[in-house]
Amino acid sequence: MDKTITLNTGARMPLLGLGTFKMNAEGEAEAAIASAALMGYRLFDTASSFRNEEATGRGIASCGVPREELFITTKIWNNAQRIGNIESAFERSLDRLGLDYVDLYLIQWPVPGCYLDTWHVFEDLYRSGRVKAIGVSNFNEFELDDLMMHADVIPAVNQIEYHPLFREDGIRRICQQNGIVVQAYAPLARGAYMGRDVLRVIAEKYHRSTAQVGLRWILQKGCAVIPKSSHDERLLENSQIFDFELEPMEMEAIDQLNENYRCASIPEDLQT
Image (cartoon, rainbow, N blue to C red; front, side):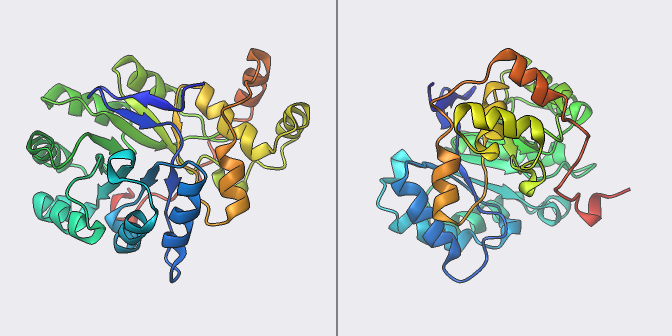
């Protein structure tokens, strides 16, 4: 199986990346990136709200992989959207990362009344070359349709929570029909589905872990994944998902696990 997917920009994005959410302990992000790079990871995902862009940048600089072989994602937070501080927020992220450009810049949340204006600035950043691709995160069908109706540049990625217990196939299908790659964050649901019998039986058949089966299920839905771990054994395990394939009946059995269980919280300033 190819380990990359083509974005609507023509760029190739790794299907597997390392998420760095809550990697805030001293040296944690740097060590995880170094280990992951040795195991073949080339995509590293951060955000201004993670408060670890500087640490991520240090990890990128010291991991031993040439910059052009890496795919780096960061995101803009809600308050910068509300005050219209988009370009300055991007420049601060770039400075913290110590980079000349990022491969993907995302609107982390669709702030009502703001995300269209934010997107138009994103389009300017994309045209400038300082961002190789632009996209969104946590956009539902309505917000994505609204954005596409007013956009000159169609998002390359929509990063959403997606895993066997939270299967939002409506937004996944809309994205894929419009050439937008779905990238699943929290793809392991923070361990919530590891003990499910269906996954254990399938995992035993392939001599895999339930985590690997869950990640493989997401890949076969046509999505990319960015599991987070700072433990070497789990980083390695999460990377070993490209050399087996689930059968259609197994995919359908995992589909039945959906219970609309969301493990990521919606920011307080967006709750209604």
